[in-house]
Length: 253
Image (cartoon, rainbow, N blue to C red):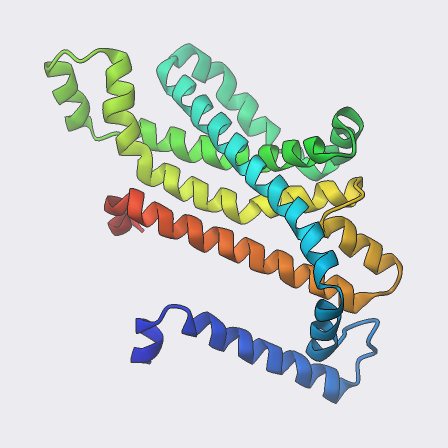
């Protein structure tokens, strides 16, 4: 147990190994047909045979996720700053933001493909829409809960409202913003994949849909595992970066 705590990567590897063994046991004991659930060995073989194809499609999906994350984060941060800076704007836009979440983003995916085409644009917009609200809500909540003593001190020092926003409220909101960014990184792949399912000719989502239609379940699982690895790597890299940039937020977790 001490070794597992000292080396962070061991625990995920052990859990993954146990899941793979369980997967193989289920396939072997239940004799599940390969077109329903391929064995880990079959998926690994298909991964090796189609490595270049999988990497090619994975690059497209990763690009969509990264661009969507950057744009969604910037839009979310900018919206939160506008909402906290202009109270009247906040009163009008907050209900609209909440109502917008009642409409499933998946339902408008065909429209996004129709409006923005079958290229990267529609997938990036889909990703932005999915992560926009978590980032905006988390940052706005952090800005609203700036310690009152900090604001009183800024008022005593006669700091301008704009300086208070960027030098007092924004630093206070960084822990909440970091939490929103972690959520955004977790759900960003959903937007890219759903966009590729609706209309695309490249990407892991397209490859999975294409493989499913041809009953190539092992190739579909190989693409799914690559997507899972990409999502985990992005999350842990983001988490490590946030721990370095916002170390004081750790005691709040």
